[in-house]
Image (tube, rainbow over all chains, first blue to last red; front, side):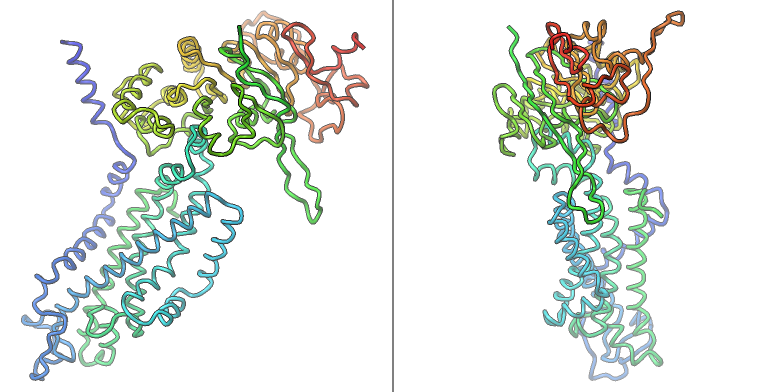
Length: 300
Length: 325
């Protein structure tokens, strides 16, 4: 009896001490104030996007054309962020816009991270001519200024928000690809990879179970930071008229449309601009925190 | 009757050197150059030599983690170098390896349970509950506890990690284990524990070891027979006691005289050799000729073959073939 009791106690103590590398990273992450602030901002915008139908007092395109007195109204208790030239409530449009911007940001980054990781891991693991082909492909993509390349891709595909997302994803592929390739190059020399081969594992299992999990931390960091750039790029494309179509309340599109009212109705521009800035700031702070937590060596 | 479990014939590994300029001829580094030996079932063959002599390369070639440039490896009647990639993967069930650095050879993101279960999954042994039981069983066999299964490698000490590495090698019930410097990264006190564990496992599980190390004392402790390598060649191969008591090859003599003896009053006859491991290796003859105090003309022209000069004691040196000529 006594023996089993002590045994159980041992197990209890041991269970408490078990920490996975991910849990430890989470602890480091939560210790950083700016990372937590960033996460709060990001979560705030995610909630706004999710609950847009509840939060927004009006739809995205509710115009009051018949009543000129509601056009370009400055912020007031009725219209928190004012109205635009068609009498649409800017607060509602910014809230709805969170959906679009976050979808484009996440979508583009997930797409490019998946594509980039796949290419990068193959290039890094197999090396030789496979690596040469994939790396040169990355170099070609990187040779163009990213926004120019995105414009070119959108012009080929036709301008729409979905194509803007695809364009941004393609432009970001080499960033992820190179990142994971370099990580795979170092991880594949580790002795536990040799050990995996010695056990008799197939390449696919080694890649998925051993190399990928040990190479993925920088991708998460890069991904968070890339969401910020993707949102800006989407806004830029929409600003140029290559992304969102009217009446979609994309933040960059709103900025573009408000350009001519800058002098007499600045609120049309300030609030979408602030929304972009805050979201990007949030993702950047969160990304920095993740970098410190997951990959201390990346700090420079 | 002792059966030959592994037979290595004229194993070679040549690494190409970086090309210089536009010259088309590529120089090669002969990391392993024509090594032949046999390993009998149930024995421990120690392989010793200084850094860079090719002992680890030999071990890795037997596992085919490195492709041999030339030579044959017969394991249990199968010629390993001719197997396809997937056939070789299956053959690795009987042929496992223990690595030098217990901090690097375990995946930091897997729990001990995942690490130990993986060889079973890969070779399709048992179902989930059987595998979990086996993990617990093997943890106990190597002197750990079953509650260690849920922990991550970084929560263990070096000695414990090496026990995990050994357990992983044992999971598939292999016939031959190649241990590549398994204790050289450990503290001396832990070394003895791990060595004794390996000895005990050998008796219990009828294992055969190839034990690669640079520490002569460790090799003497565990080996039945010992092979001495120098610059990619096997220069001497003998029963453990006979090699340590009566080394024949001049290099082995030098190597053994370099072992410190824990007795301050002991005056040993120190054999000193000149020079370092040669920068430019001799093109012909014995590779040890430049440093050997007994080098003759024959050593400069003829490559000495590994020959049995006494029962069970082979040496590759011209000093021992003159009487017969």
